[in-house]
Length: 373
Image 1: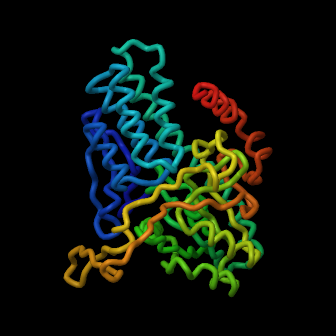
Image 2 (image 1 turned 90 degrees about the horizontal axis):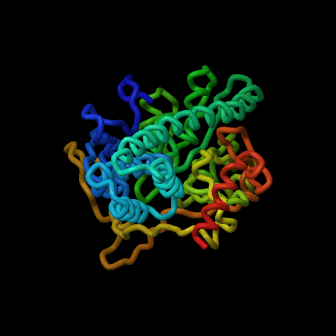
Image 3 (image 1 turned 30 degrees about the vertical axis):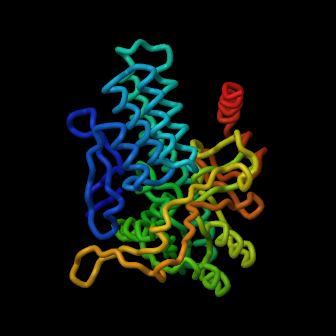
């Protein structure tokens, strides 16, 4: 997407053809900076520290992280160590493990001398596939916005988002934002309510993205969404996801469940933008089975931002000695989801709908379960 009018992806191979470039998202929205990853350890650190983030994107970074490890040592032992290191960085999003499995599958039964080339080729394909998936999600989601716009007679369609499911969280376009960009580019009057998404304020990343693209938006505190819905100021909620179960339960950034409850109470459609690598057919009950990452308390106890002198400052916002809990995700039961916007169309949040649309994912899940047992 656009940065200062220039098209940019969130991950790329550098000019040397082997090291990996990413955007340092911990510097946004106040400064734009990039990082060059040269080792698996650097890729793992980037994922763990959230220099790179978003379920599809951390899958792509992990795929290239495995490539970097194999470039140094293409042995089975090196591959196993790298996979274990990368898989441990973020436990909730399933895309990361999926991407590692895809790269391993591309190298299966190949001699060591061919592994690195095969791994890099599959990592590049994963990135290109993600772009195509997000574009398809955008086209299908656009229909929802077009239908609402037709009923509003020229008034802006108000969409509420949560966290950042934009192009910064994918390779390009984004999941939840792809329909927004396409609607804006099609000339549909549009306004986006952007949840701040504490404690890391990832809604500010969405605001930065939307601003770069020229999409009208308003940044709001997390607890404002229900009030807006009660007063008819939200026409549609679209969020992303880090994992969707076989039954259609949706795991996404903490606070998503509350938005779904408010949407149901106020009759506001609640849609989830779902790229197929985020599907996990090995899990049925999202609340009981999905591991929820608990991050450091410091993210809650402090806040960082640009000070009056232009520098970046971190300040305490909680009394000294207070404890803090920092659960990164929650699960929205399928019954609260109006539909899943996928690359193969808008689906009901049901096992039947998902299995019918993605039979190959069901087969792959059965193979994984069989191998694990």
